Length: 107
Image (cartoon, rainbow, N blue to C red; front, side, top):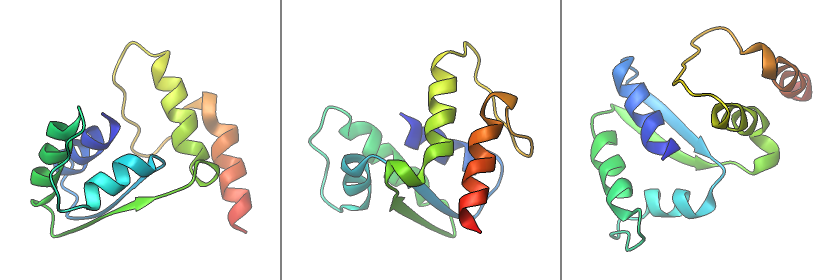
């Protein structure tokens, strides 16, 4: 699950204050709920809740797909990639146009 990978990465690189954004309203609602998740992926939700307790501060935010074009393009790119890859500063050339369009919409 992408949310768990994001939490793991933030912990690995030493981020202490983090905001996790995602476009799945279902996952978002389960992550912010204090009730146990009865979904098939409930154990992953519980694991994420335990992991985030290591951060100084954290929050989960729901972002509509239209506001999450870069993440969506990365996810589509990752489906076709056989390796796990992390970019810390550079943007993969295949999605550079999506990042530029996103930045242009901020102005």
